[in-house]
Each structure stands twice: as structure tokens, then as C-alpha cells.
Image 1 (cartoon, helix red, strand yellow):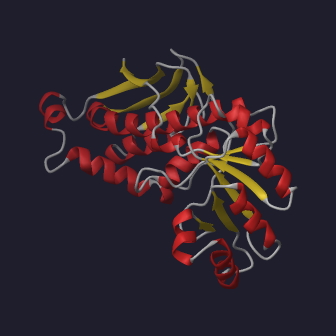
Image 2: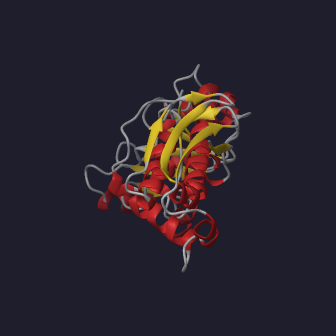
Length: 287
């Protein structure tokens, strides 16, 4: 289910908003708006949902306008984490007409993208609500926007996998091949890891899982079952018997996620939540 979480600190998204505005305004600013709108003119505009969904990213929209007009104000009607219906008012923004027109597309790009991620996450979380399984995102994010997109996942009720290569060990299939096998890969990882760093390893078969289990408790903390069928997941969970956290990954869809959750894994990770999500349709309508 969608959830209310603390807002992101400004320092974590100000650079992204500034870069987006710089990209759009280019070398000469908004030559259309500057030509036809008086600099002293003020307007009100309303963010309106054109689809059902979950809201995320309103603070980025607010910052977009305040960077263009320090007196601009965005008044929220729906907070991040709120479920809205098509036609619902989300927020009202007031400021110079030039600022509202210059920032319109940037604000909608951020808002629509993050709402889309939150909505897709909420749908997947709802699909597994009957099971003790968490929905997890991945590192398959838009370059430079990972913090924002992982925030939207949390707003949608999901949880975050690692943020980068430096906050947890994840031994993938290519690591295993390069290291010469599962056992040497895990032994080297365990020898190097600090006491606060978790180790996860990906397996493609039940035989590989057995090799991981032989090293317990001196090997992995988490095992990723990659592209396992529901029957294979059930067998894997039986063999693991609570000794490791289990994660399912690979081709996860809304239609398949409930069956996989029913097989008993702790986590299901989906790259689709961020790499191929559909933007939620939101409009900005002037009075």
C-alpha cells in the first residue's frame, strides 16, 4: 500500500531540478514566453490527475517554480503517498506567469515520472498483500535520478535494494564466473567484508543454491533466486529453511508476482518499477 514517508532533504534533489531547468532553458531562456507575457503578470495554475494513481514528487515541482520565481508558492491538496482519482486536484501553484510557463514541463516531467513509479509499486505491493513478501526495487534507474526514483518506490509501499555498488555486496553470475565458482567468490567476499555489510549471491539453479548453503553461516546472508519458477522457488525456500533471506528476481510482472510470493520468498525485486514504468498522466491547467 502507498505510505507516508519523510520528505527528501532539499540537498538530495536541488541539483537535479536545476540541471533539468538549465537543459530546458538552454542559452537564451524561454523565448516564447518572454515575447508574449509581461514580466509583472501573475497567474494561478492547478495540477490535476488525468489518471488514477499515487502521488510522489510534489516537492520537486514546488522547487521548480521557486527557482524561477522566489515568491512562487505551491499549495498541496494531496500529499506524497496519497491515492488520487482521475480529475482530482493535486496542488495549486501561484507565481509570475512567466515562471509558471517556464517551469511547467520540468515540473510535470518530475511529477509524472515519480507518480508513475509510486503507482506501479503500489499495484505490485497490493498484489502480494496476502503474503509476507516485500516488493523491492533495483539499480535499474535513470542515471542521476536514483535517489528520486527509489524515494518514489518507498512512497508506493515498496522498499529499496542497495543504492549503489558501495553499500552492500551482490555477487552476480558474472562475478561467479570471473572468480572461478560460487565457493571462491563467497570466501573472498566474506574475508573482505565489514561487519555491517551484507552479502547477497545470485543463483540460477538449485544445485548452485546447495553450494551456497554448504558455506552457511560463513557465506551469504541473502540468496537471489534468478528466473526461478514458482515450483523451484518453493523447493528453494524448503532447502533454505529460514537460514538465509530469499529474494526472487528476473522478469517479475504484475500478473506473476502473487504466485511467486505464495511460494514463500521474503523479497521480490523488480527492475520494471523504474526502468520501464509508464508516466502518470498529470496536467497543469491555468485559470
